[in-house]
Length: 386
Image 1: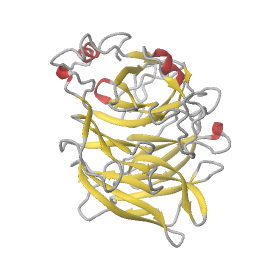
Image 2: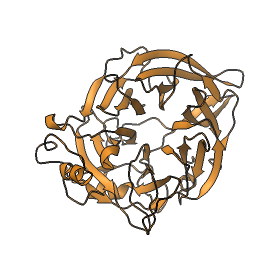
Image 3: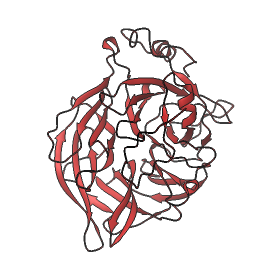
Image 4: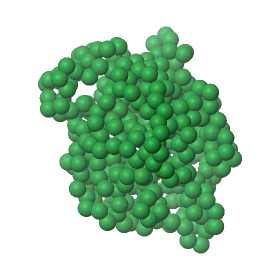
């Protein structure tokens, strides 16, 4: 645990780690937040979550999480109170995302999409529009090229063309971009781009900004990169932030999950990144050049244990219910620790009220509780501040 208002350099000392120099001048000062809810057991090796927003009643939204061990691989579905609703066996799925309003058989449906490691496929499920539960769909398993070993994934819908894409990566930092479509009442995929990302190190977490056409990727031992998400773009990356703390970086290995908090315009909102090595989370401006804003940690409280070694995370700005009226952050917790110090065999996921993130930051974070992922950004100018 990193205590309130200690610099990340001090936090590293607590963890038995070292850094060559202070972080960004006087040092970054993490602030502490207590989660509001936690899920029940979510697999031996959980990783990444996604948040599905119910179209008519946001309070009935669900959280979908991944479990990636051979013996219990699959997807868990939880309600907003953390209660288990469903488990769907699958081949060691890793990152999971939600695709909204996908055109299928003269209808618009929502999909859950993940990278399945057992058979190196792109795997997809239909999300029941009333219950949020997962259902099989024709074409729900799509092969990747021979000798390609899948690792992570993320979805992207182009604002320019309306086409739906999914990015899949391998540990060797290679990215595949697939166009997803429907034909004869069956999902199909088409490989439209293949490129190497970062500096060639291990990658996994990624997130795409559908309004601005950007793809953010995490290179675990290096930093966060940004690429053009359109399939015909040149694969030239820009380093957003790095683990080079001696030269102004704000990250430490491993750089893991990332997600976008959508604001009221294309320039509003935040990129949230899991900094696994120090059990913390960085906040960046969504707008270029993606200025670093602040760092927070999740500590025990509300009958919930502290959060450590987060892999994946997901955030939405939509107001969901009375507990999360201005957005929800869900993070993976490597293990649940009981009051007697023992650790649970299975992982859990923690739910964080985004208002607490906004209140704790020394930045004036803007909220956007009316965000609807099924509608295009209308670029409104009015703001709601915390």
